[in-house]
Image (cartoon, rainbow, N blue to C red):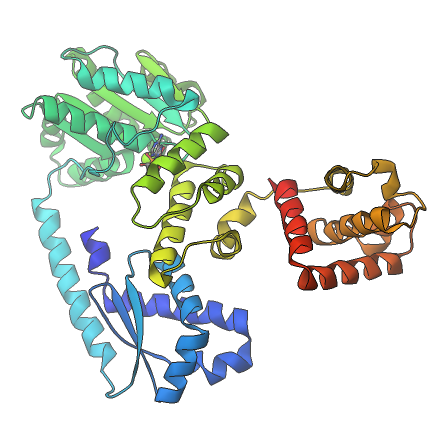
Length: 458
Ligand code: ADP
Ligand code: MG
């Protein structure tokens, strides 16, 4: 977090370049050249970005027309931004010099940290049991983690947690560490990623002090290694890990391992290691259900400073099915945007702000499904989608279905025409135009169409 706060000017400048690029795509070269291009990144301080415009006229115009989109695009790059201000430029700062000094300082700081850092990685203070929402998919893993954290002895060894990315493995491991330390600050807990384990091991090999390396681990009470799938294939590290692992288990020290797959399915890992990893308790975290996604969103929303309505939370729970990290990312983006522009978020804004996230989880729709949903919605018979009847109550829904087929599937116009009772492709073109026109004119019609799109895509 402190690194985020101190995000230096060079990073901010890189973000500004990306933001400019995206705006240019959105508004076109001409508009871009007259307005956005005039802006210069002036400063960054206290999470506030300051841009300068060459004149007051340009400044006012940009604030009126483009400030919102600058903000929303910038938030996609960097959620920690608090404000973006546009001033009229007064002086030309030498950014290059500033960036250089910042970089050197950062480098020094990093070096110092490396020297003094203990072998265990930092724990995220938000990753506690209290902040973990439990549902069917993760209840076993949660119960096992609690059990390990609360026991004085070693209930099962190792505890092996596995599941896809962003489902809470790291969260649970940190929660175990917090709980153990709370109960007994003297217990020595080491948490580290498998990658870091490897890094230290290889370094120890190079400096020929593997004995000291091993000692570090032999003195711990609880050792947690996150993401062991990254150890696979690296022979000597695997060997060392295996020895350290066996030694600790023999001494009755608690081991907690996580991976993206079960021990049996881990690739590139030696058989004896694979089987030993499965000796204790193996607990998997299943993909999230809709209920759990919604529960997580509701819990996280309560902690935000800006309110997000429950229908938007439901929408997100429907659309973002991959993992908790993406759900959180979406929520943070919406909340940051809402507090930045001082307005409540509506569904349109959600769709715009989360375009990238929504696209990846969007479902493919086919013409038949469209015809079915549209007929249900307008209460007509499915067969009327291809019938010759032309009364408005039938023809309008049919046009909507053609319009949706054009926009939501990759079918060609003639193909769409064929599927609607062998109609000509010009009929489809006419339907698409008609629906576009009505959407612009008639708000309640437009809402109908939006609703249909949402239903079809979720
Ligand atoms: P993994 O290690 O499995 O890839 P993480 O533990 O890093 O996943 O989780 C990703 C993000 O989702 C974290 O911010 C974490 O706090 C959050 N998260 C995951 N599962 C839950 C849950 N059940 N309740 C609340 N937050 C969760
Ligand atoms: Mg993780």
